[in-house]
Length: 598
Image (cartoon, rainbow, N blue to C red; front, side, top):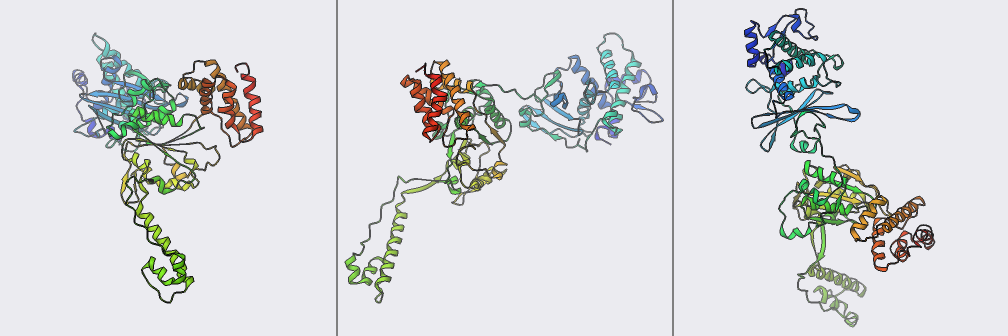
């Protein structure tokens, strides 16, 4: 038997209103009247029993629908095709606020209780602390939702009759009221306990779950994963729907994403400072929402050069209030360079005095003595050829030792490791350029759940839980390699950024350059878009044309005031390594459109 209807739950004292009614009418908790039994009661000797948790649930629901219970909320989360994902409920009890959802497909409940700012697991159903009415109230609500999977006409009719009678100021029909109470209790009990299929009125209940109800963590509440997107009554405070993302500015989003983490003074200059009116796209906000509301910290952005990937990492760092580090990959990036960097040593050690090398004449006169100058070992019988080889070897070894002691370069932590020690954003650029795709697997240990790896000096470093790793790359350029699947699988989100539209390129160029000739810039953006499509369609490699070329074109034009000359210098010069292709693109896409503006 499900814990909702353990034997001891039937022995609980009824709410005062119902206790008084059965006393006044000379009735008992259990009625053997057929008219008091639900349609699901298939017993030959029919009976219906008033169930205290169910009656408390019905009274609470009535109060919520009547507006008397102002701290409750009921609703649903809809999915695709207008189907119900979850039935949702919140209720207040003293300083505690309970949140529950019910998945009708698998019969599973999930929930939590919030007290002040702490979210904890729901207590189990037990005699000392019975919260069975919380679960039953949600099932009762689901039974009243017309047109949904759990709607039940019989329960709804008698529940509404109870509400109407409770709302009336005049004397109630006690027999009718009590009969509806019997039927509602029996209806829910039989539908849960009968194991009827859903289409026959059954209410699915999963494996025993009421001693350890699945916990809804705080970050899942904030993410809107279980939020109600249709509220029937009340105001949800915990099970709120996911905020719809729209293009906003940095200034408008500060309050949503700023984390207020303490940053060491020496790293504060690394926090980006883009203007407050800089626009933030929804894709970037999606990453920010995951960072703030979930444990997700590993992301990848793939898209064309100039599509704004690096700018978006700056926006993310600025809104979070984190310093931003950059590590740029290349074809020769090795595993060791992911961990350490070689930098000039400003504290170069004092150089060892140069040894006095033997001259050629010394070697001809006495090879053994010439060799002894370098090695300190006089070999009387050594021949010239052997002595010559050993002199060369000794000179090489001495040169190596001296170079090692001079320490012109020293090893220091890479920016990846520096960023992993603090709340920070690290952008790892052009990861697809690495010739050996397996190189990045050196970071897998930092990307795993325990987030630890060992450095060359034997130290074990643990990635700070607030370190955000963003890999940015373009897969279409010459020299780009495929990713190692083990690295890709560790990313919490991979975004394939769409090409900027003509309007987006133009608006961004206007904002960044300050050029007031908006109509001309829109023309320039349209030309860039056409050239880019031409290069792709003709499969012309070795050149580039994108937003950066547009911005450079605008800057060049603002200086020269000659739009054609600026196009040749900033755009045409980069579209192809072949002169004939450059001439074709110039005569096809630039000159016809801008001859009048020149």
